[in-house]
Amino acid sequence: MIYFVTSNRGKFAEAREIFEDLEMRNIGYTEIQADTLEEVADFGIREVARRLEGPVMIEDAGLFIPALKGFPGVYSAYVQKTVGNQGILKLMSEETDRRAFFRSVVAYAEPGLEPVTFEGEVHGRIGFEERGNLGFGYDPIFYLGNRSLGEMEIDEKNCISHRSASMNALKAWLSSRPEP
Ligand code: IMP
Image (cartoon, rainbow, N blue to C red; front, side, top):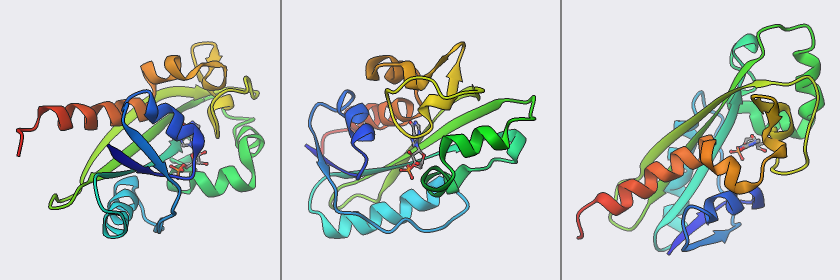
């Protein structure tokens, strides 16, 4: 059994499809302001491992838009909370380069183990309108082909998403390491 420390039910629902034995713990942790998701996740997992006994994991993600020099990137949560999807659409309204990608870094620790991290990405583009009410966050403006992630059920999103890539990498690592 693994404790997934997050306040985001959408993330937990996605992770739950990958790890059968997962428990959500909404206990909060320090999300430092850093240049990379790895630094945020590495700092966070060490704090969580000190506070919770047992296997623990956290995940930090962001939306990166090359035409905006990577913005919102590590500021994704703040930007989503403030200007939201409409704010991003507005910033992109005159832009022809619509490319964007999500990046996910999952960090895992257990007693006696130095924390490990795994990453995943999905590349798509920013649409011109919000579509769909599934998923969360930036899903309705992030398109693959002619559909947004907001129009995809969890199992479909999990076939392609940044989070499923990072978490499946962790899962593969967990099942391939030698028994202690
Ligand atoms: P954090 O990993 O919770 O810090 O996420 C940063 C921001 O990106 C939050 O506003 C999330 O809602 C958003 N976000 C993270 N993952 C996804 C995703 O899979 N789809 C859409 N938005 C996401």
